[in-house]
Amino acid sequence: MYINYIIQEDEEALTKINLLFAIYGTIIPLPIQAQTIYELTIPEKEKEIFTGHLKLYGNNPAGEEIAVNSYYMSVNDKPVIPIMGEFHYSRYPHRQWEEQIRKMKAGGITVVVTYVFWNIHEEEEGVFNWTGDRDLRHFIELCRKNHVQALVRIGPFCHGEIRNGGFPDWLFAKPIEVRSNDANYLNYVERLYREIEKQLEGLYYKDGGPVIGIQIENEHQHSAAPWAITYPGAPKDHTSATYDASITMVGVSVQDQTISRANLGDLYMRTLKQMAIDAGMITPLYTAAGWGNAAVIGNEAIPVTAAYTYPF
Image 1 (cartoon, helix red, strand yellow):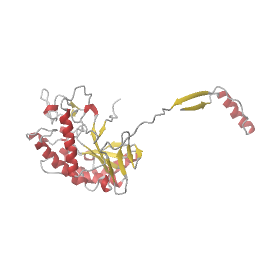
Image 2 (image 1 turned 90 degrees about the vertical axis):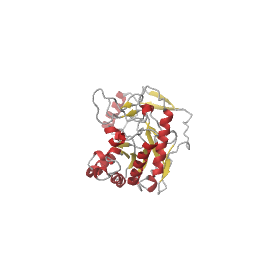
Image 3 (image 1 turned 90 degrees about the horizontal axis):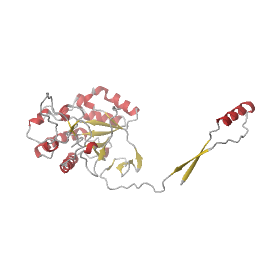
Image 4 (image 1 turned 30 degrees about the vertical axis):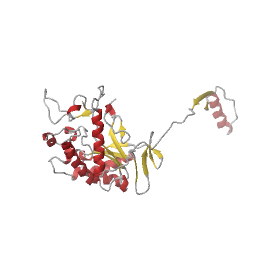
């Protein structure tokens, strides 16, 4: 199939036309030469787009449906491109949250993404704080009020350039293996997830709320964070499972090593997702940071592989 475009390039002839129009108030047709023809070839075979293989869909009380196929996200079967912007509520004065949400919306953001930093909410073991600048529920309610959707990154490990990647200090005094399927570690994570769910209850897409997605963990088996305060020559604890210590990076970087225990990373991510669902965090979309060969959940989470905006 061919489409022809004719480009008029005789500037002298066009100048004459304009002059005649100015004098006589009409245009006298003049032959224009030097036409250039460009040909564009359109492939006859259309791209195959298929559905039904991903566990990424959901409905709201208004009958709208969010789904993901092999090529794009859709709302009511119409393709959409969500524009996501990051805003960490606990790092900003809560009295200014709404102003910032409105600015983001005015700039074209349709989905506000935020971290839940564990060490901000459970500084003291067993004592959760969801007030003031920590009021996750109020932040999501402001998203609903201003008609923007939300995606909540629930950890347990967040990184986010925060101390311990978001793990509370007291967690490292426990005989546990963080970021693994260690049962004792997962008991603490389960408690965290149930506390987060209490804050989000009734605000999910299925309830008519703005929360359309949940991110599980962050950069698992790719990136870790230095623990607490270190000194020159100190052994590095990169907030990762022992079996991942040799392959995790401090920050986001290029992964040129083989992930030797990828099966354990996959199991860990699937376990966390099921724990989130069991806690009540049910959304159409689940995501996982996918760069650097990070562990994702095949067919059950979107492997987010965006780039940071600040480098050259």
